[in-house]
Each structure stands twice: as structure tokens, then as C-alpha cells.
Length: 140
Image 1 (cartoon, rainbow, N blue to C red):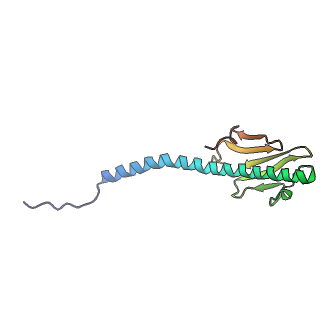
Image 2: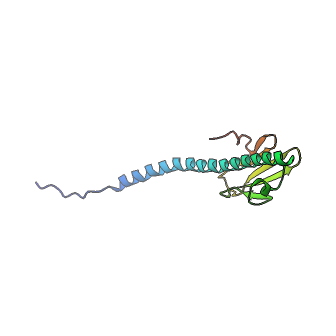
Image 3: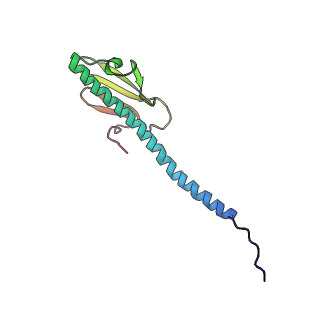
């Protein structure tokens, strides 16, 4: 008896199983990736506001007042400036001899920023965010 000539390769069923497995893995990984990207954007907003607050304190020590002029604080423009990647816009919403308030607002729209669309910090170090009130504390 002669052995039959079999073509080596994969069957359609095997190919479909592989495609289903890849699809399941992608459906799990992609939302985690999106959350990672959103956290990176939020981190940039928090860092920019903390830099602004530090520069406000330095300005206050030299001038005995806070300022709403971002160029005096080392930023590129005034009254509003975008973060380095352009996802948030920073502005000093109020400033006087005793206090200041600064806000970072998400610019891109959509759901990438999640629940953390605005961050606020003032001269006393009080931090708030919206619509979720725990964005400053959340690292995950």
C-alpha cells in the first residue's frame, strides 16, 4: 500500500480558532491600553498645575502678590497655555495678594480623559477635580 499524499498546512477550522483567540485577547488588551493612555494625559495635567503652583509661590516671595500672567510664571503665553502634548489647557482663574486659583481643562473631547476633565489647585494647596472628585488621588 502506498501512503497517501497529504498536503501540509492548516485547516479553516484551525485558522478560525486562532482568529477567535486573537480577537478575545485584543478585546481584553485594548481597554487597558486606553486607560493607560488616559492616565498619562491626566498625569501631565497634574504636573503642569503643580509646576504652576510652585512658580506662583516663587513669584509671591519676590513680589508679595500672586499673578494671573502665565508668562511671569515661565509659561509660553497668557491667559491660557496648553500642556506639552496639547491635551489640557492651563489657566490662572484668579489671583490677588492673598491667593490664586488655577485650572487645567481637557481639550480633546471624547472619553480619553475619563472622569477627570478638570483639575484645580489654589494657593493654599487645595486640589479639586471634576466631574470625579478623586482624580488627584487616583494613580490607577
